[in-house]
Length: 126
Image (tube, rainbow, N blue to C red; front, side, top):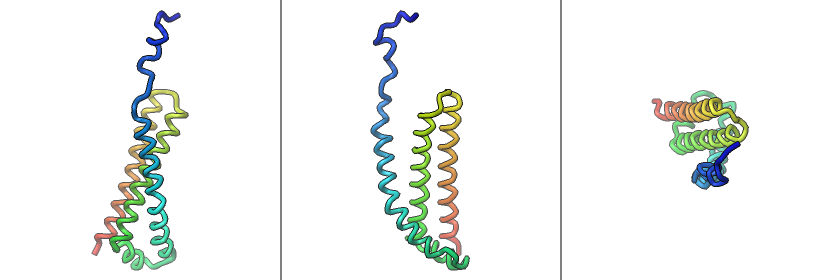
């Protein structure tokens, strides 16, 4: 039995004032991924089955390298945000929630930066 009033029980359970920001970032990354995915597919589809030297030459083009890096960074950011929503909705233990949120965020960012580094390394190789 609790002696708290209705107001006392709900204080602190309200909005975190972050919902609009998360919604807006989700929409912005979704919209940004549309042209980035099309550019990425157009640039990379022609390289399927190509020789190594031809692929390296293609990624040394500034447009290909920059568009691929942008695609990777935005895609992994969008993935991290989407996974966060799924984890928050379905994981209910506090410790596991924190571990999964931090792990997925770090994993997504690590993969995005690793891909961006790989493209930059190819782009700047002689």
